[in-house]
Image 1 (cartoon, rainbow, N blue to C red):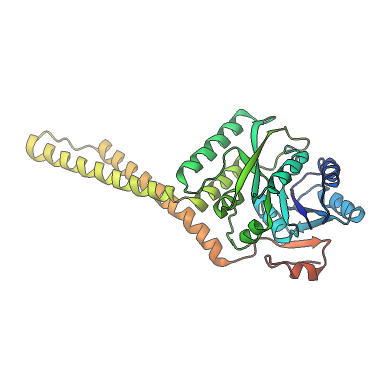
Image 2 (cartoon, helix red, strand yellow):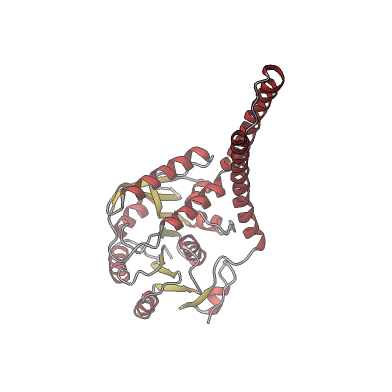
Length: 324
């Protein structure tokens, strides 16, 4: 198998048919003597996405679908596709058609030049709010500064990677996946191809601000200990300020004798110290929660249905699965 294309699906019934048509046109025109496969991972959709995937699988043997038992999240859906991909090269693309399938030709050609990762870098982003563009821009630049891993900015999951990258990713059992960071951490030769990102073709995005915040926390806690260091610095800073205030209080009370007891300064000190302590406890809690999730070693996902045989699923070096 020359190429596997992984497409996570969440309520994309309005885009699946057009995406399949464009992917088929692009991949059929490429020189792939070993063939290709389309891996659709249905991440707990509530619309007719699964029905459409089944219809595609019946008419095209190159279409493989995996239906999750519930919504596990975008990064987990992509991880499931990576676990079951058979291609020597693997491309990841979303189903909303913001990322053009036609760019896979350029990504694949670049990969053949000896690279292991070729990611699609956005020159522009159409159809997105100013707030989303600004928060995304700030997040990736802040993440680049606080981590030792060079995570490329202005990129998403749209990229193509070699099989040895996939085999390495399968050895990373983190429950809170941040694949962009993991792929950057793996290393090897990496480059990019620039493109202009279109607006969403149809439907509504599943990435709410709440999910984006959770995704940002996963990225930061997975590849940086800067929040823990910041909590430590805040603790030392507040302790230093408190020590100076203590010296001033003793001076005012014992030397100047003009000390007037009052509740305002006391309450301000208590609230300030309490706030810093809660921030530090919260930061530590985030890291502890992620460590706890990894220690429990629950499967990343559960597959409820697939057009693959149970034997084929069991032979794949992936998470424990349930099939019917």
